[in-house]
Image 1 (spheres, rainbow, N blue to C red):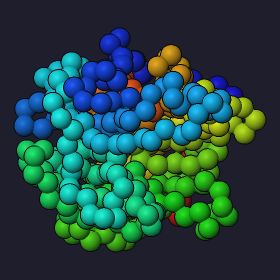
Image 2 (cartoon, rainbow, N blue to C red):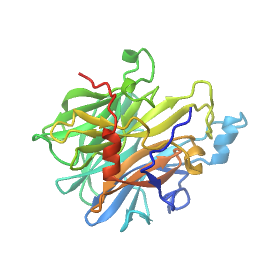
Image 3 (cartoon, rainbow, N blue to C red):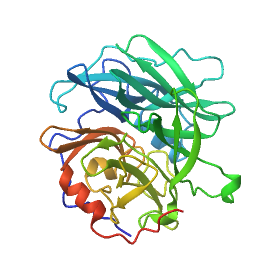
Length: 342
């Protein structure tokens, strides 16, 4: 099965925007970035994997070598136009890890009340946790909240709704789902960004026509006149087909979707585009560490109505696509055969 990209979306001619070799420190994969407009410029926090080469991974795949060690840190970049980026001379760390932390990765940025909030995933010996930290200068960070395992892909709404902070998240209960990767998108709220409750299912895998695996939040939602424009990632598993991958054994296609949530009650889905926002088509999306992967992590709504969507491609590089807000809203509302959750 092949999935088509929504005609309203255009990939940028300068893709990939960020890739290995551009950083002034060791880097093999640069992807899954969070992006925000903050203090008069664009800021990007990207995942940076290093400590190995493509050749080492391929030798491992072909049984000619051992698995190379993979290390991860977070890179930081700034831009005046959201297209041309200057990478900071050294990686940054959102918090000081304790002995439980193996690595922090997949950052998502949301500006709330004049401060930049960073959601990220943390690997620990006892499961994957989702964290929230806050900074005003990307030098000093305050850890605000950590979830229990297993939860990740957290993104924050950029303002309070009904006096509460809101977030989307993706818990992944293996036993409760019969051992399958059928994970869904949930929504929760908080009075202070630290304590989270009132968790509710927002979007289930069976509601998305281009998903036969798992779902999760993508970029933080942006506010439009019609509702919260919200991207998500969906997985289509090709059970009888192997996709390109440096390490091998890869059959999951990651696809970007878009939906519209109610402004006053974001737990209510107003519309969902029944075809993908976009799927892997360009060479830098089809081939890489894990081929056929697109994963939005940042979305900027410009004054002229254009939306910049930043996404990781093939778990290898960071890219940009654009669309007009009105076209995406229309796509979400065009047809509604969506089976809404009670």
